[in-house]
Image 1 (tube, rainbow, N blue to C red):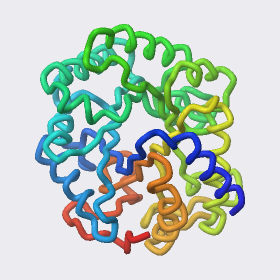
Image 2 (image 1 turned 45 degrees about the vertical axis):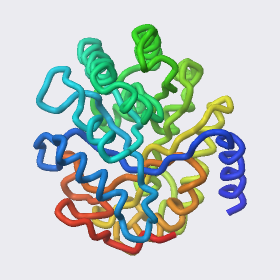
Image 3 (image 1 turned 135 degrees about the horizontal axis):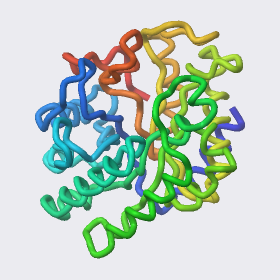
Length: 313
């Protein structure tokens, strides 16, 4: 408990002059693999703002890609939906599919800025080059068959490329970061990424940390310990919590049990300590990961705006 309070104090000091945002993660597809469009994003952004018990505080969205699903390089329709719902955006570019796809990501984002102007760019919290690419390319990620990733050298190159292409555009000067797990952030070979970014995104799921006791009773200590690990390599830069949550349905992971009661306990212990104190993107409003068909992190079902449990803090 003392560790948690200490880390909250550090967060307050680091973000005293910065606005703090609270939102959810949004993929470009639905859990059945179909593409999300403007109406989907607008509906979810409005649902997030209207969640009972939250006083309308879920007003931000984190994206994984800037490309509209089903196109090669069209700007994702979430950009327009964010304008129309006054939602702030942590923009994402997928960085684990090679240089050609990353170039398409850059072109889509720049096109979005050119088409939508300051109505879009003024709502940008920051821009993340990739998501868990370093973890997937690490020995741990490869052992877990996590999929294609990107090395620290590649991510550093992508960040430099972005800064070059942003010069003279409405995107110039926007904070640029990267999102990953603490286990990837602390690897020596990734120190250059931490040096290159303006903020670090921290993904943490104590539910999945099966190398140590991870029952819901240990969740808070495990979470804050992980945050401390990421902050240890951040050099005083802001650390956003970009993904965390506990499933209400799913297979047991060592000591971690997925139930609605435990999901609520995790939200109350972790979410309520983060909200308003540190920029946080909860995982998640609705399920959309096609690789997770036997597990649900969603606070609401896909077809209902009614939360699975009381969200009041």
